[in-house]
Length: 111
Length: 113
Image (tube, rainbow over all chains, first blue to last red; front, side):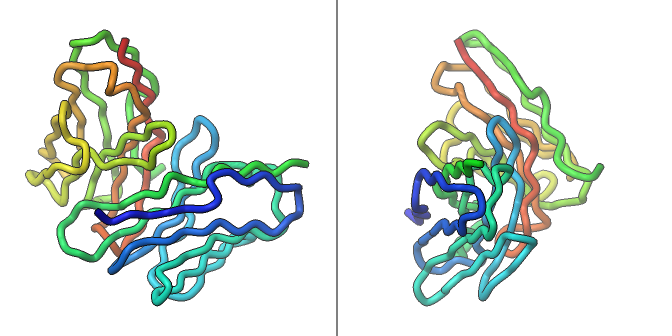
């Protein structure tokens, strides 16, 4: 069974700190997604990447295909960044069964 | 606004009742899917569809039924609700699987008593 592992599960940091969330996955993905979910809220897609690095505002996502690892970074973190961040892999093994999700990282940014 | 519309946002059912969760998208996406989200677990795929008239089972399909008569709509039916189906349900759509971004609905919080 293809799996996606995220770390840490929970992270509390002070406003302004640099945040890193890690994601590792099994072989043969076609794309890696990073999602954001605010408490009681819906899920928003942040990034989809299959190689290299993407940046949007203070968020940066990287992926290392050889190491089967992706990271999500938040620079100059702010309390509004408090949310659950979810990594999801689209496996390239054939079929159309969508994404395999990590369990999420619960991030709290304190003022 | 373009996106995925999911209704209802909240629902309480009694054991044995049936209901339909609605999902509609206006982006002409071929791929639509239903997930459930439970505490301590990642989202799990219930059913998915790669186009009108085509549906298939995901990881946890038991107790649920779907149909895809149009590109826009992908309803999820609970046939006979059980307490184990208490969860938050999300519908999502994408142009296709794999290389395209996903758009999620706002979720349905379902409680079965």
